Image 1 (cartoon, rainbow, N blue to C red):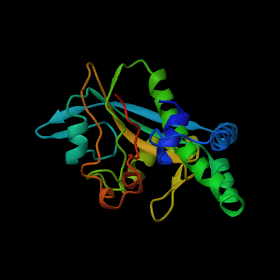
Image 2 (tube, helix red, strand yellow):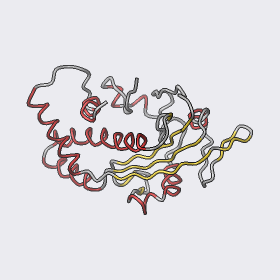
Image 3 (tube, rainbow, N blue to C red):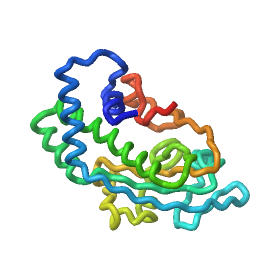
Image 4 (spheres, rainbow, N blue to C red):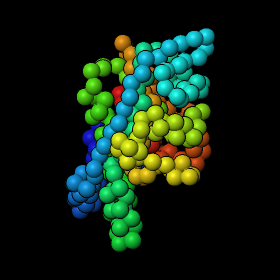
Length: 216
């Protein structure tokens, strides 16, 4: 999907007609967001070792949760990834929150779509064909505290300026981390809302959509 279609989905669009002036505003915000963003990524790839019912990689991070083990069940390697759009997007969102709420809401959705596209572009640039979906801390049974381990292993602060607040929020705001399995064949894994801690209160589900990119 394009950044535009993903941003519209985040905004709750589900195929209904959009007035031309509103679509022009969306297009303008997409152009502005791309111009302002300073995307950076960092990744590391590790071979997976399996012993008994556990998985191990040569890094100081424990990946042995039920959901991660399911994610990596058919994977040969695992990629840890971090990505950010930079502080410039945060500043622009704060500015529009005070001056133009509509533009801020649209830019927030566009930036969410753009950071996913940045990660997709990174994965497409690597010499691998078969990936699982990206699995992030806070989803399923993976605690948000794992963000600390991911950022440490990736040296994300030094390499892309990505850090955490004391409440485990990422800075810059429009940033993501993820765990991705790499295999030798299609692993037939589909992402769902099952097990998400926010499912009962999810604003995306109230709009009839989801927070992640839908793939065929």
